[in-house]
Amino acid sequence: MIIRMPRRLVPILMSSVLCTFFGCSKDQEKDYLELRPTDEPRKSSSIPEENIPLKEDNVIYINEDIQDKEKVIELHKYVIANTNVKIRSDKSTKSDKLGILFEEQLLPFINDYGDWVEVSYDGKSAFISKEYVKIIESYDYQNSSIPKLDNLNSISEFLDKKDKIRANTTVNVRSDASIKSEKIHQLKKGDELPLLCIYNDEWYQVDYNGQIAYVYREYADIIQSYSAINEPKDIVFMISKTPLYDLDTYEIIKNIPKNEIAIVYAQTDDYYIASVNGTIGLIEKIHTQSLGDKYIVIDISSQNLKLYIDDIVIIDTPIVTGKDSTPTYCGIFDVYKMEENVYWKEFDVTVRYGLAFNRGEWIHDAKWRKKFGGSIYHKDGSHGCVNIPPEIMELIYYYSEIGTPVLVKK
Image 1 (cartoon, rainbow, N blue to C red):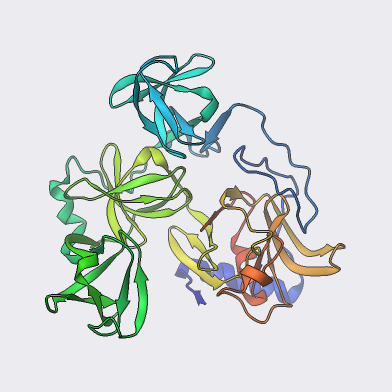
Image 2: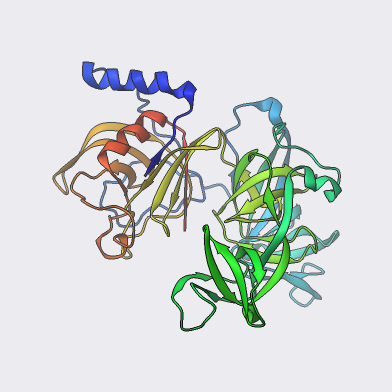
């Protein structure tokens, strides 16, 4: 558990502590905020559902809450696939097949023809059956804090090139150069580690979290990889599945799943130079959305919650999310309700602090739990809520506000 506090936030925390002793409370907005249209309401929840209106519009709006109009450059429309769908040369299933738009991937929207939508594909007009896609709108922002590159020749100003190994399939990281040695980690295809040396004809010697380790050469390739020189300039998340491209070869390193986050260091007209789970490459801007200045990221796989302010981790804590039979939903949400001393009659339980971020799902303290993190959630998780250690939940509550984005990812 890590709590980092910028110096400018110390007075705020002190005032929070004084309020705790003298009985004052934080002003709270009681109005419900409208859920994003892409959020699916929980069908069976442990927490009573709130009566929050949902949009029935066919268009999904990304970045619809614009606070600073001057930062908006322009509005774009895209289509996003609900499933793998064929791209056609004309508005007919008998026309030529030009390609496939894969599930959760995007193409620029041109026109709507009722049963068909016209899109831009490889710089040319093409058509997709409207039955298999949704139309979304996205705002471009003027983010002056992200350095702009005319080309990638000046990339050395932001990144340091070094030798790494990249797994070409699933491969074990071992404590010694032998298949009988201890397995200390497993790399997935596309994962990278710093290369120390070519140990022999069969093994690479690598750096695994500061420890000397070994990877079988047949299952990994030596690459020219990059590490960041400067501090990150923004953190974005994927609004759809998108490729991560190699900076040198422009080949696809791996596909980034929807809701995953990326750390941005620089940008070109159409791409971000960004790091995804430690691997730096290019991602198309149209597949991303900034999380703003303050936000919460919940990682179900690692059972972890991080609260960011100005892209700096302020709180880092283990959590317990929904069990396998009642999982916590992934997606992008907002805190729409904040309450203290929340009582749920159904379970005869009261929590000290609660942040509602999805229908029937709350972030709240769980004083009845002795342990957090790990694999507890699979069988002994919640009914969809995010359980937090009580002493940490008070800080999360204080730093949050109505409208704080909450990203839930796997």
